[in-house]
Amino acid sequence: MSEPGAIGEYEDLFENAPCGYLTLGADGRISKVNATLVAWTGFPADELIGRRLHQFLNMAGRIYYETHIAPLLRMQGFFNEFALDFETAAGERLPVIANAAERRDADGSLLFTALVVIKATDRRRYERQLVDSRSELQQGLKTERETAELREQFIAVLGHDLRNPLAAISAGARILQRSGALKEHKELRVLDMINTTVTRMSDLIDNVLDFARGRLGGGITLSRSASRPLQPVLEQVVDELRTASPQRMIETSFAIDQPINCDRTRVGQLASNLIGNALTHGATDQPVRVGATTEGGQFKLWVANAGEAIPPAAMEKLFEPFFRGDARDSRQGLGLGLHIASQIAQAHGGRIDVTSTAEETRFIFTMPL
Amino acid sequence: MFFAHGFGCDQNMWRFVAPEFENDFKVVLLDHVGAGGSDLSAYDKTKYSTLHGYADDLVEIGRELGLKDAVFVGHSVSAMIGILASLKAPDLFGRLVLVGPSARYIDDGDYVGGFSEKQIAELLEFLEDNHMGWSAAMAPSIMGNPDRPELGEELTNSFCRTDPEIAKAFARVTFTSDNRGDLPKVKVPTLILQCSEDIIASEEVGKFVRSSIPGSEIVFLKATGHCPNLSAPAEVVSAIRAYV
Image 1 (cartoon, helix red, strand yellow):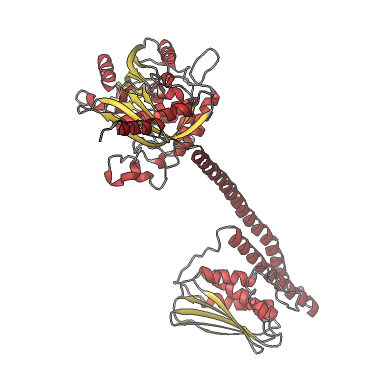
Image 2: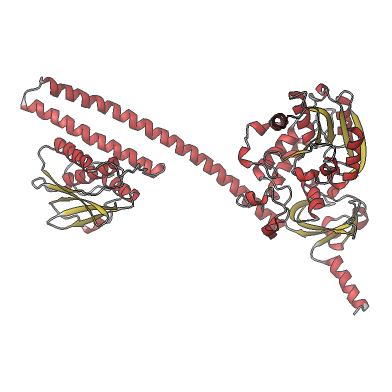
């Protein structure tokens, strides 16, 4: 099979292959180079032969070749897929991907090193773009993290600064109440209104801060425990709302006989938001009814009020932030109460369902025990 | 005898040299933090922002092992790291062998380091081009386990893998370092092994180190390139043996 034609074909394959071939002698100098690489680099074969490979690389490539590639080749006997930049005779950059393998004799002495280079202009540009976009992303992420941290601080400071004056107002009202200085019916009503407003304001601040944290920070975090009872917390919430709205009726029926693995403060907040919502939107001459049960491995808390049914269009948006129903009362809040209640429910692995008819509107919070 | 590798590799650099001394010396090898089997979590940006951080590690290891008057063999940038360690802890090393040392890589006035600032900046960028295949997820299994065949194909180019970010930082520290002022302070006998045709640390650079370290000696190796410890281990071994 060794006709001249076949040999010619092999030679042609070497010389004119669509990749560059290069051999380095045992002394590390170029001993053979094919016509393709000669054409790509623009250096005639006799200028390449006898020189060292790194002399035809750009400076970064030279350093890299000496510190990384050459040691690796010696230790491993080959290398694969290294990016290198040749410098052509015209002074242009020729980006390539190179593989190499050593050939050794039976005693392990190096005979020569064979090197294959593949032109990789587009590939290398593409990879460079990947690297660039990755560093852009990392930079963006860093900025984002810093902003998030700043926001967290802002939220904490805001919460603190808003609560402090409120606490002062509340303390002042309490002193007036205890001193007995106010006796007139009208004066006492003003005192009641101050208390009511302080409670509402305090709830609003809680909701705003929770919303900000939930949206901008890490979401609502829970500290759950089943060891302490939930019922006293719910009773306290109801008491506070009764004090805040003395003219309204709130009826409760609690049947909690199993421990509930929940964040009691958060579930208290959820209850407060649902009851507050019922007080705002329910019929003022009818009681708001609140119930809680532990049954079938679930905890259920429901809040019901009489009054007009929620329109179907509004039903879908109830739990969206800043949604405000068509309430006549100007006392309605920011529209965050239900949103945060549903966030708290979700954080507990639970949910809030709503049914609304002309007779009754009922919110039901369900979570696993 | 304490061997320290340079930029671009790990203790594998010494695989043909260090074993030759095991009969006569207690041989200590290390991977600088960020290289080889080192604990990547120990990498501290601030500490390793100068060669002093690496030198402190040598001192710490030396103290831990109770080394005194040891022979230090440092390749490339570790030559300067060893000098700094010996200035910090004068009793630690009794002799220094510097393989391909350079006190400064970037040209400065009359001083010829071999590189311009622009070229070093290009190198830092170029490093990115060859870390495309480096995956952080693979790192724990690749690094320090080049001989594990089960890692198969992924293991091509397995020796001397480094975390790209750390490699870049190490490159910056290495190639922007200037230790010319430290050389005259060296108090211990020092041997310089100078390769021929070394583009990283040229003969001129080696001679500068030799003339700056009082009483130092220089041996010119026939070996070419920057890594005689790999390309001509026998020559390196006999030069070290003749000195220690």
